[in-house]
Amino acid sequence: MFAKSNNTANGSKERSICVDKQTIDLPLVTIIVTMFESTHEVRVRYAETDQMNIVYYGNYAQYFEVGRVESIRQLGFTYKTMEAMGVIMPVVELHTKFVRPAHYDDMLTIKTTVKELPVDHRIEFFQEVFNEAGKLLTTGKVVLYFIKAKTREKTTMPDELRRKLEPYFIQ
Image (cartoon, rainbow, N blue to C red):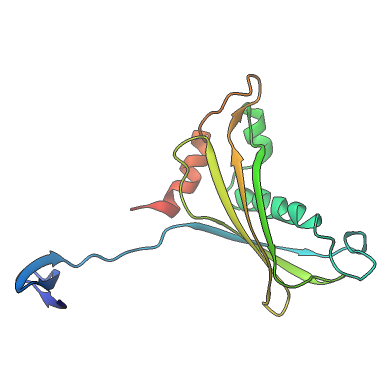
């Protein structure tokens, strides 16, 4: 099996693949990775550390929440607006991996990524926390559901938020 790229008569590109002595011409496709990413900085406060001067592990859930809330705000939308629309977002899963510790007064960067545009009631946020030196400290994944506040039934993402996220996921 071998592959090679060719220019066609109309200027587009094709990839030729030879499999079992048969050549198949395929259009050359550019794959674009689509996702929404944002970052937010937070300084570690003394009350967030333990006796060893290390951030207590339970505080990372709050850091992840700050990252999620601020990522939505960077889109020009807010949790408060969503709640006024009658939609809430409870956390249904939280996964955290601790790589190295953060300490009192460290400036942390929380990177929040939405890798897939939600198609139903579920949204996943992938999060990473870095120190000032750019070293990865913690990773996490948080899954939330869109829920109607009054009935507690699953629902889809509000249209206004969807419109804000869609440009990051153009096919």
